[in-house]
Image 1: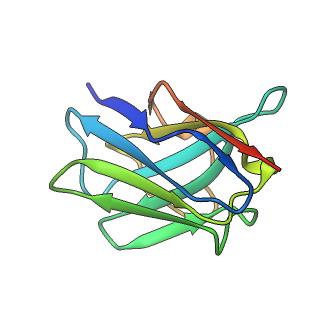
Image 2: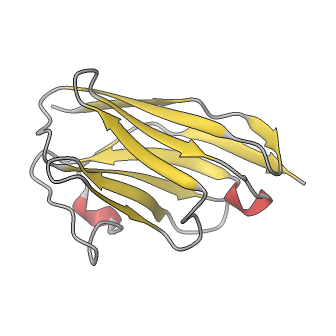
Amino acid sequence: QVHLVESGGDSVQAGGSLRLSCEASGYIYSSSCMGWFRQAPGKEREGVAAIYAGVGRTYYADSVKGRFTISQDNPKNTLYLQMNSLKPEDTAMYYCAADPALDCYSTTWYRTRDYNYWGQGTQVTVSS
């Protein structure tokens, strides 16, 4: 069983930065895909970024490229999302997701249905 706990959400002004963390417990392959997703009120959950640590590949939604960075600390079993130049449209609940058997591909990393394990979410609010 995989257990994910996010932290680091906060309220910031536009242009500010935040770093989200996701602590994972249970059995996770270091080479599996882990991702960050977000969901704003009234909208569907969407992929923000993913990392395939085994081969060092990262993937980003177009809306966050150049502003967000996903990284992973394998010894600590922790996933991070560094968010810079935040915009009001980044306001959402952010979720960490993982699956020990999941590979990351550019055409699939954002599919919520592929991830079987989710955290409870951490709220990010960006004011203008």
